[in-house]
Amino acid sequence: MNDPTRWLFAGQLGSAFDDGGPILLIEAKSLVAGRPIHRAKAHLLLSAIRHRARELGDRCEYLRAETYDEALAARDPAPGERLEVVDPTSYAARRYVRRVGCAILPSRGFITSESDFREWADGRAGSRLLLEDFYRRVRERTGLLMEGDQPVGGQWNYDHDNRQSPPKGAVTLGLPEPWWPTEDDIDEEVRQDLDRWQSEGSVTLVGADGPRRFAVTEAEANRALDDFVESRLGDFGPFEDATLTGDWTMAHSLLSAPLNLGLLDPLEVVTRVAAEHAAGNAPLSSVEGFVRQIAGWRDYVWHLYWYLGEGFAASNNALAAHEPLPEAFTTLTPDAIEENCLHHAVDDVRERGWAHHIQRLMVLGNWALQRGYDPHALNDWFIDMFVDGTPWVMPANVVGMSQHADGGIVATKPYASGGAYINRMTDYCGGCRFSPSKRLGPDACPFTAGYWAFLDRNETALRSNHRMARSLSGLRGLSDRESVVAQERERPPL
Image 1 (spheres, rainbow, N blue to C red):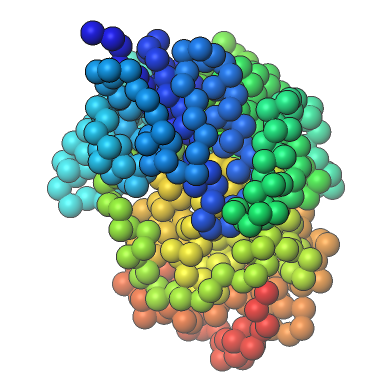
Image 2 (cartoon, rainbow, N blue to C red):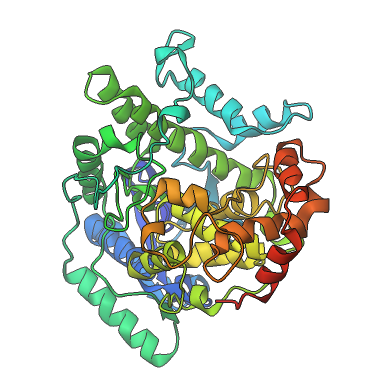
């Protein structure tokens, strides 16, 4: 009997998904059609698929079509062919491969299995599904940063060491420029196709057409990993939450996109990084912070996507947020945004389809939370506008953590803050016409005033959350509460 043909999806393009038999790759235009999508994201997906097809050569049947249905209908498979697939990364794709009769293999590309997580979650007996508990379980099972049954260094979490403000007066962290991939003929072909499709009106692209900044092959992804370990890992931890206007990468790894394309094995990545501490090449706080992001948070949100169900993003709106996303977000046009931090965050997304996690959570997400943007629409926006955005990544991150629309399943309290946090962790406020210390008046910071207006609007919904007691007490003692709320009600939208 012939080997089965393995159908690889866009999140399965690394060697970990290839067991050596014949391969089917389908480039369906529907992957980048439908809702508006960032041009850098569309380029990345198509370039990655086409590069993988070239690497596989004659072992790969590579089809281009409008849809998967069209591609499968046009095939002339060998007699008795068995089509198999590693379980894909979205509900829609899983339904599809079952409908067309593929043999289903267990999912790959994560450190823990779906069955392991379900066993852990079901055994919580009503306790919250805390990331910290899950993360400790992963480390105990894998031995990552462990000495016997104890964590290396005696602590599980070094978050307290990883909250440094950016160096005062610095324009950048002073680190070497990251390694960037070199575009080739495939990238040029992708660019021409996107231009043609956009002019035809079959796709809607937003954002800048910059050079490709993220890996699309396994070789490129490993070069990017090497570069991070050698040049930025040591500074990653301390400045993990810091932002500088002149340094969009800071010390971040830039590996989220290639990880989500399946180009890197996450266990191999964190094992490599952990070895840097063991060899004395990187501080434990940086190494643990990175391991927690990959072995903790990334696996955690993957499993929550399946465990919480397909309707999680659409059906959760605990704070009754229904405002539509502003045009500045949907078209990525930051020119009219006066708030310096928000302007730069939207502009970073426009330029590259990427911003680091604090810009996403404490600038973009914080702004949306304060103004009551619809969480489902915001979830879709993050999926479509970010090069690492996927249907499984964003629900727990956006609907749960960022917008608190799930009422506290993912995060114990809303991630709302005033301008003081942004002023402490960035250099944005120095160049802004608004003052982070003011909540009332023409130069009142919209984040600072917006924080109090958010609490006022949601006081009833948040009253039972003990972690919000101090904030709500402050709201009740605010002498100018009514004036601040009225001011924010009248503030023009973006």
